[in-house]
Image 1 (cartoon, rainbow, N blue to C red):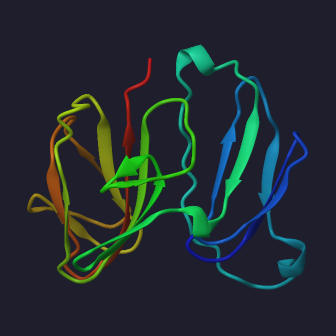
Image 2 (cartoon, rainbow, N blue to C red):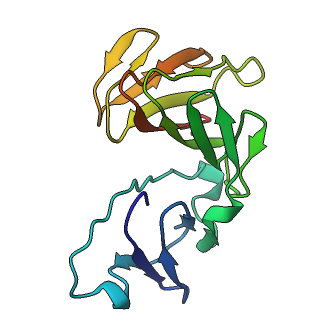
Length: 182
């Protein structure tokens, strides 16, 4: 979440408030039932909820794994500061920072807040050239290697390629990706 709060409940018995910056990572595996609703203290009030909910497929070998739920507080998510850019490595490893969130396959999820004109250089990954990556802006346009990408549009980066993301007027965007799945 970027703003607001939700209450997660699931069939494993977890009840967890979700607040901005935290990560809830649920593995469905062979089956789980869940919901996200208004927390009791906010029911009956008007408030904004803004965020992204991403779904990641499991590798075929793990599709029938035990269901699981893990909550990671916002304070445990590593932050990196670059010129004009504040980013948090929510999942995966990049720019020398590694998220504590465990996944079944190489996965990347980075929350980027860029000031006007700030450039984020995503280097080509020589060690894992097969990794897929994409950029999704939640509030303003960006350019990727000079190509304009409107807000709320997923821009896929060619596997193994590097690129430069610029937020002309400033923007919050996600860099996501990982290993192609079977």
